[in-house]
Every structure is written in C-alpha cells, then in structure tokens.
Length: 483
Image 1 (tube, rainbow, N blue to C red):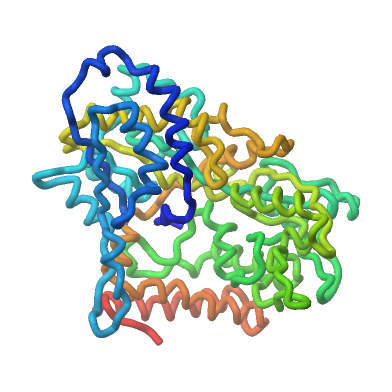
Image 2: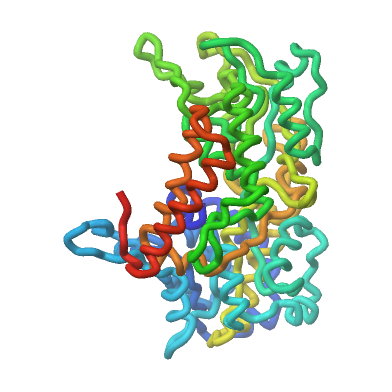
C-alpha cells in the first residue's frame, strides 16, 4: 500500500475547475499585484510521463488561483525505470526511493515541496531535511482545530510532537458488520473501542453452518481468498511486532508475544471462526457475472469484516441494484472502530497518510511551498474533494456519510495510525532484494500449525532458526536468494 499509483482513480478536470472558481475571487490585492513569475518544484516518490491525474488532484487549481506560479512535478523515481526489473539477464536493481528523493532535494536545483508517506517523511525529519511548520502555522494563524485529531496526532508522532508536514487526505479502514445476521442470532452488535478479544468472542457466537452454508464470524478482509498468514497482520500491526531486528541480523519471532498471536489466530482459523484462506471459492453460475462472487461480506458469508473506506461504494451500489441480482438481498450494515489491543487502546485500523506535504529545508522557493501546503489543506479544497470516493479529507467538518445514509463514519478516523518504527526497512530491502523471503518463510511454518503438525511455539522456534540462517547468508551475500 505504500506506493499507491495515482492512476488508480480518474478525477474529472471539471472538479478542479469548480474548486478554483470560488477561490479566484478570494485572491488578495497583494497577490494580484505580484506579477513576478516563479517556479515551484514539487517532488513525488514515483511518477512518469503522464502526471495529469496528480495535477488534477493537487496542483491545477493552485496554479489557477496563483497565476504567477508554475508548478513543476519532479518524481524521485521514474516509473519507466522499472521496466525490465526482475530480468535475470540485466540484474536491474530496485530503485531506492528515499535516496533518489534525497538527491533531488539537494544539489544545484533542489525541489521545494516533498509529497510522501509517513516512513519517508520520518526519515527526512530525522535527517533535518524538511522544515518545521509550527512557526509558519503560528505566524499565519493556520487553524488546525478542524483537522481530524488522529491524523494530526499521527503527524506529530513523526516529529517528536512537532509538525513537519500536513496532509489534505488520508485513507482508513473500519469494522463492517451485518445488522441482519446479528439480529437473527439475537446477539448485540459490536461497538466502538472493543478489544480484539471482545470481537473474537462475538465472532464465535455468530459462526454457524457447514459447507457452502457456513458463515464466518469475522474476516480480516471483505474478500475471499488470501492466506490468514498475511491477513493476521491486521491483528498484530498495532503491537508493532517485528519479524527481525532493525539491522536484519537476528529474528525476533521466538517470543511470547508472537506465540500468543499465532495461537490466537490459528485456533480461530481451525475453529472456522475466521477464514483460513484455502476455502473453495464460489463458482459463477450459468456463465453469468456475479458481482457478489468472492465478496464475503456482501454474500453474507461473514458477520463482520475489516474493510477500507472505499468499500462503502460497493455496498451502496449493491443495495441500489439488489432487485437486478438473483438470490441477493440488501445488506443492512454499519461500521465501528477496528478492534484494539489493551496495550495500545488508542491505536488501530489502517490509517494511511500517503500524501504528506513537507517543505524541503533547501527549498529555493519556500514561500510558495508554504502557500501550496496551506492551500491544499484549506477548507475550500476539502469542501470539493470531500466528494472523493476513495480517500477521506483531513478536515472533519467535510467528512459526511454518503448518499444521505446514516452510519458511524467517525469509526474511520477515531483511532490513531500505527507510527512507523523502522524507517530503515526500505533501505534494508534495497540492499537485500530477497529479504522478503525471510518473512515469507513464516507461512510454511504457520501452515504446519494449521495442519496440526506443530504447536505455535515449535513452529516459531523453527522459523527463527531458519530465518537466522537466511539472515546470516544475506549478511555475507546481500543478493543471495533462497529456494
């Protein structure tokens, strides 16, 4: 999820023009008199020849309201450079996005603004490569009272409670639940701020049926398929458990915390409370396309599921077209905050701050850089962009339920995001391209637990031993691969 491609969603150019109109009239006299033509260089982690979506989303309206400023988009890594990656004959290496970004932030023509994710921004803060924004915010009386508290706190966590970046949008997840299934079972539905154990106990009470009629109590995803080995990361991410240490020299999975995670999840999977991931998927009937196929929640095969904000669109579309689909009944649903651990009751879910905007400490045009960041985080911008179907705007006044529905939308932004722990991880994967195989190796041992061949403690101990062998090999040969 870290490097999302902007081409995922197409934004109409009309929205940008609409956004610009009310703001043009608000230009100050000093701005109208200022005829000096300036260039504002904006760095992104990835980019290519076509930056139209990014411009529509972020900079077109700014240029319309600031006619004397020309925005230049400067990607740290050109996506075109990825063509041919993985070709064994060329042995092309994965571009190091952080190092590439640092290069365009320094040198003869440094960029002014950096747009990146939390891990990248935290690294830049630690190296004093971006400016603290607090003084600028105080000077301009920039109001943060309407910014979602969990988003602002997540930003402050990156810089020792100081603000080095702002983000106009964020993405998040919540726990969806099927009202009808709870009512039918005579069980009270989930509420905000429940612990994982609370939710697991609820899930057991909602689990029922056999074979094709089986209903899971909980799913870590709304979609069918995918190993529970990977999906259980939703459970342990907020505990900030690590597979290996920050230098990738020693495994850290042979611990009581990891044993508790594997014991908990494997028992739920074996008891069919959650999907194992190897269940047979439903087949299409009569050669017809079934939009519910593979969707555990819409098909009524799970009482609860963790899903992202954009999933609401699918629920709305499905319910609107219920009369057109055979054997489909409208789903009565709502959402609550994702489950939490007692050790970290304020942290949960998957809140992603992937569009953090910071000012380069070496910016040639810091004034316009701040103007862009202020503009992108303004109420006017949020008012229009709140219509986005995929991300939420950071100003809570403009976060409203869609289509006039009444659901607990606060569930998506009540909890704080998990702060990045090892900002060196990307560099480790750059240095050791096959380091991921150490993590993947764990699935082999977790499956042995699901097959009742080993206890969680035994499996973790073996993974730790094997992983240490692999890490030692990578230490000697960073390019080493494993069969």
